[in-house]
Image (cartoon, rainbow, N blue to C red; front, top):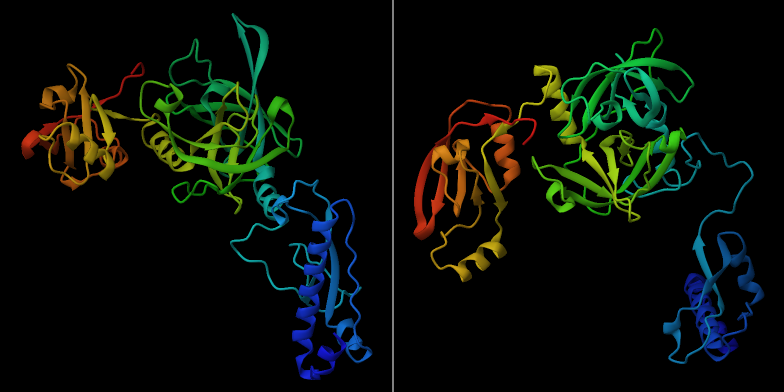
Length: 436
């Protein structure tokens, strides 16, 4: 070792330091393999001429890691393996200051796409003041026998609060637009009496309004279209009336369908997360790491942990637009059961039936409701919708977006049938009834 060090020039000190670190780590691994119940202490003798180089620009820190079993084929109990790691950096100084954002002066700025130590806390802090606790007295014939509790978020300075319909509406006895009263408590302690101005039972979304003489905190609606499974999210609300409660998790699924959950009726899609939510979280916001609302927490699976669901904010935004335009959500109804097609499903269908139309994309119609607008228009089971109102389509979502709230408006639909028979149909959507 001494002969090797004498041959190294002063200009190769950095290379020497790397060799020392690698030698130290390797010695520790060999020692751990031979004696799993001991701690490996590696001593490296450094010439005096190089000691100055090791002092200031380098910081050598000792870390303790559990030994993974893959280090040895022997069956031994994992011990503690000391490893040395070193990085270039300036020595800590007492005059280093930290600003309010948590960034230390002199350190590089954190990556915009990285999850830092303050990312979750900052996101919660942006939305937190606008999260409110909702309480609705319940009873019969004027006799109160309990309260319905939930959460909501102030989304406008005029006192508009976004929440769930089942929090503020009695599903048993009230089926239409409800003008009920709601007790609203802000995180700063202020209390208001709110009024339910709109409620949509199918989406489970409602709007409550309060009036304040002083400014109200608000939260910003984001977008749920760019969410991906694995994205970090924060659930906020007042579970069991415990105000200012936040939990964090990830998006588990971005398009969980209502049929997957055994919920019949109109097709709906939910965001599935593993955030912990409980009774009282309903109506509270689901927030991304930028502090934007990307969903409204609506329910959980009682018999399981880590299965929570929220209404995507893109759907919520459309519902709010319906509320503003007509006071209710207008949903066109065709009477079709539809299935999105992809290459794999198409290949499988062609294997089963060689008369299946030659298509690369589209929406399959496996069932037509008798007496429905689609039935009167001439739709048949097995039709593949390739164009709707003159626009190519490949998903049910696209068809819903094209229809919008156009009820009673004739629409041309191009469908392909067995043996590539192309047919153009005219369908007139009806407004969906509340019991559909």
